[in-house]
Figure 1: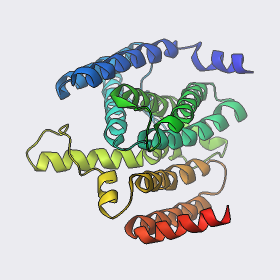
Figure 2: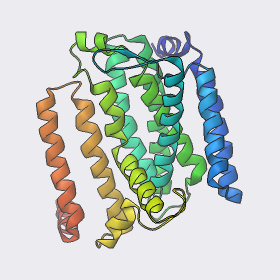
Figure 3: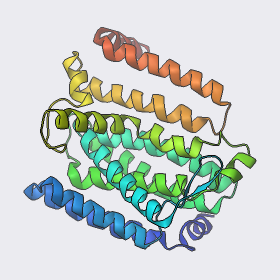
Length: 306
């Protein structure tokens, strides 16, 4: 069964070669940045080369699930593919500001991707869903293995070499899941709303994307480089509200869960129920974030009952 799944995932396109090569490029780029501190243009150039390697090996947005299926012109599909990869890499890189934060958020996002991909590939036998299934399984395993050593107080650190590779793999999963699977066939199976394949990547990456967009807007408005570091990321703002590093990390996990899991679950259960669950978790996340004393009371209550 596992060998058959590997064949289904990669035999037709050879995508695995591109994914391995691109991951290697980003890994070496991150190691160089961690060692010598590369400038933003050099890092963007290296990330773009990695995206180009993916394109050369068939990892590309072919269509978008809008009004059924909208086939993309080759040039537009290539441009959007590079954009998705660059945004995904830098979104995860930007959010990697606290011990265990990036590994946990990416792990939760990958579990959501994996759940939907598993349903498509294994249960409903969509061959093209095999690639995102295996990619996200690798990401989940890497995050689970790394997180115990990286959680506050961390014994080892991820650095750009880790965060950029995770961002690349999530971007690849989004491309192979969203832009290479026929949403008409998905709707025919009544697995989920037609727009779920395009909404899911935004849902699972909501927190890193929000942090990235706010950072670019904030720094550009101040006349600085969008890649200039500062202390105004989401996790910094949560700490300024009175939370510890550990509680800020848990809260951002909860926010990620609020966006990602109900959206992925709408493939299995009615979307109205998942929307209600998402709103409940979002309200809980907002309350615990805004009022640190509620978080401390909840934590004390949970541990008393264990």
